[in-house]
Image: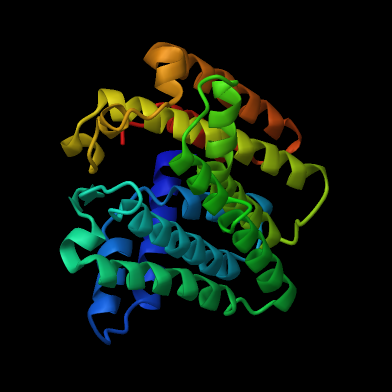
Length: 289
């Protein structure tokens, strides 16, 4: 099987569904929502939801709705992250960030609306137990004990007199990793797998690749460019932000990412038909944007 073709199939499926979900045009906020959500992006989280559902032979109709929801929620977080009160970034996905294009107030509302619409989308899943469980997974991953906690800790910065690696791992397991893990687990839930050894293995895999994703992100901030990455680079250094590159250097950070990737792949030993996930873990390790 050509996993690259399968990935493109997942991305196209989600992009088409997202366009349908946000087809209504009722003002500037809806334009800002579409501007940010439909501007591209890797669709990492959505693709993982569909891949796990595919792997288990689950309900793809439900999984597409879950994938849409996680992309909406992820996009809301990016819009808010880019605001001047947060990371103050001017570019995202190769275009002006939402607040630069539409103003801060509209960007804030667009983010809020995407967050709200994510859970409305999950409510469309026909099986009420699957809908409820997916909503629980997504809200826990994104809430004050997950992604928002990670953002809070990230804004606070690390205490350089304490164990920096542990602090960075705590920040990034929450800020980045929790949503990636939830994406995988929602794909399992849409397949009737909500507990057991395989569910736990998928969770371990997600926890690992969430860290890898952030480590590579830190490296790309040092080694890439705005044209290649679609967003400003060098911002971590200019803001005196401590990252994995600060602690390990570029080569050391990538060595650690490689070790974690190997552990992620090993976690899938008990999971049948996990070839795509194994391939994708390696792809995340060598991504260039």
